[in-house]
Length: 230
Image (tube, rainbow, N blue to C red; front, side, top):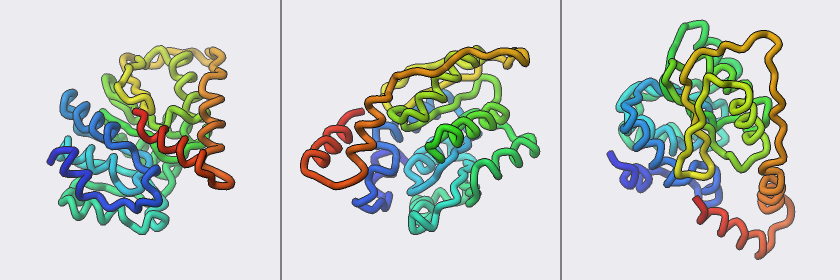
């Protein structure tokens, strides 16, 4: 099953079309997993299952997804996966990631690809990364979504400046950040490098303004332009 076929079968409400990852991002994930021959996958966030469906279609293997808010999405994520015939690959935990991830660590689970796209607050992303690191095999990959957000940018900055065991890799999608775990974490207890950055402060505030408060034709036009950007 190819990305075009997957997207044609997904049921996503038009009024919430901005919630899922973009089709070019989903296609990147699909081809990346195939190219790297990755199969042990984990995802924080599920929503309408656009990313999950592309992951499972690529790997044809068990996929662990964590999301406590399926009711908010009218359970369309689960229905989409069932409609695609991929439900036998899905292991969905309808709970918060800060509850589920430590249990996976205790169970000594290991993954070679982890997609972080759940809680978008800085502390939520940071906690997801912390446990993802414990669950990731050496040579595996962590992919973060929504890099326009200030919170995500700070986590990216932390990893790039403090985690020499991770290699940042460019992707063709401007809203994704990819890291490969290339060695073991050898920091001592006193290690710390400042990771504060002003990068993305303007874009975060601009997009927040466009998506909240009173609607206007100008805001709609700006959002339309944003959606056309990779």
